[in-house]
Length: 282
Picture 1 (spheres, one colour):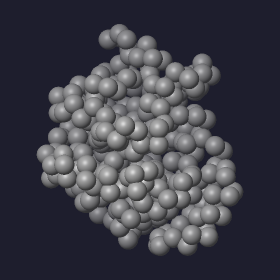
Picture 2 (cartoon, helix red, strand yellow):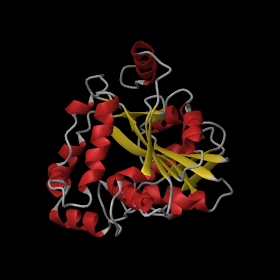
Picture 3 (spheres, rainbow, N blue to C red):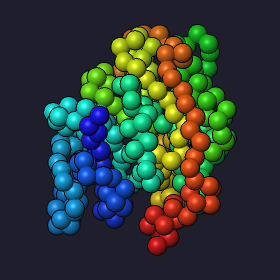
């Protein structure tokens, strides 16, 4: 396996520098932003990174993520892991992704969120968006099982895991879907649903892991929850774009492999690592 690690950045040079300290040699920094001053700031910083690209932005997060896939598909690398530059990999996280990706085209990860209160957010504190809860309200909805499955898995494994992110793709997996360039948010949720449907149809092989030692989702800057974002920003037009972008097919929860990985770290060790990386604390 030849794995490319891609760091996607649109703002905050200090967090980008932090994220880059957690990646290996086979890494690319992709800048996707409408902020020309930030582009110049990154160029002036002369960061120690072997591969670097500036991609076209229209202000949507999905176009930036798709530019990561497009970059990967043009390379000789066989697999991809990618991360937003305000998050970071835990020690050994990339090696764990390699292990999970063996024989799979897509790996999604359930992990911790570091909150403004300097805590790891529990599953029970997380609220799914009202607009999406409405769609998953009945057994007749073909997508209802997707989020119910994700939530049930997380609750079964631990009350300290809440987030699913796409953390690994093969070339086949990267070609199986596209991030929306029209959504102002929830592009990753739409992508997860589409990957789930492609797995259900047997087009790709997918795996969902609960592994808190892969990466940390850092929301310590005070950003709101997903529910806050959706309830305030997810307009009827955006909701229409979301559902129109869903692939055809029936969801099959048994199409995935699920794995819970016992952490190598104690809670105290994990918090010590997180506090060391906490930019606002330092």
